[in-house]
Image (tube, rainbow, N blue to C red; front, side):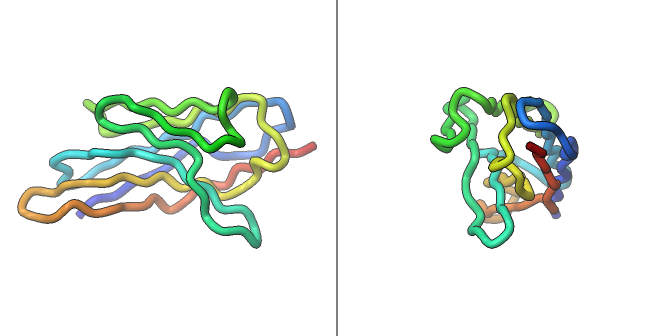
Length: 120
């Protein structure tokens, strides 16, 4: 079984910063892609940022230049540094990983979500 646990959400004023962390645990053999997604009230879940094992990153246009995704392979942990936060960044943020467990097929796993609220 694989578990992803997020931390670092909270309430911040516009222009402020937050750092989210996601720690993967369990019978992880390999993680190919790690990512962050978010879902605001009444909206669909959207991709915020992803990073591959080769450190290739991809960002939503709305966060480019403000958010940075990084990873620590040894710890199966990845991060989302969020700067210059805006009220429209308010959402529940979910971490995601494409994981290979020994003897099993690749599959997606999700964290439980952490609330980020940006006040104006």
